[in-house]
Image (cartoon, rainbow, N blue to C red; front, side, top):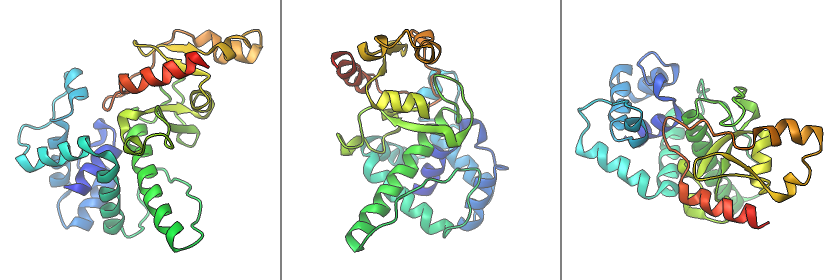
Length: 245
């Protein structure tokens, strides 16, 4: 179930069917049928309030154990993402997994660095796939659909809150430009998920580039994900820091 929840977080809802290449590959390694793995993923979908808000329902046969796993992730994304990513890595044995894009991790320098790097990679990999798949691999602001140009932007930065590092509700899928601007507190989003420019960026509004890529989008609402919506409280913290800068 750890692996199933891991896969659920990595695939868009519309790709949870038994013909998906990743599901087929996972099922083979688990010695299960693709249909049984797909059914387990749809069981998890039945707990997803973001899907329910959109009128989408998962299967109705979810077990108490399924609920316990779902709640365990919701209570501690940091720990559960590391455990599930470790189980996934062990199951797949470094096989090429499609259709998930790869992530670059800096090589470790020694034993302690190696352990830290493995854990960081697991958290980063889980977080990236969970966020990007929730937005169906599209930038929430521009609609760009090129995965290598998309980032899973932390709302509360990685360095500031260990508990939120792997929490997909602490993320937004943004292209590299908007990710950088968001990370540098040049843009933020209001209570309705609309783009707000910082004072620093507004001061540069006469620049044609800033006008086209930022000022013209001011007030534009994010395209919200089908699950794991951005946490309003995290956005409130980011917004306060951006507007105070």
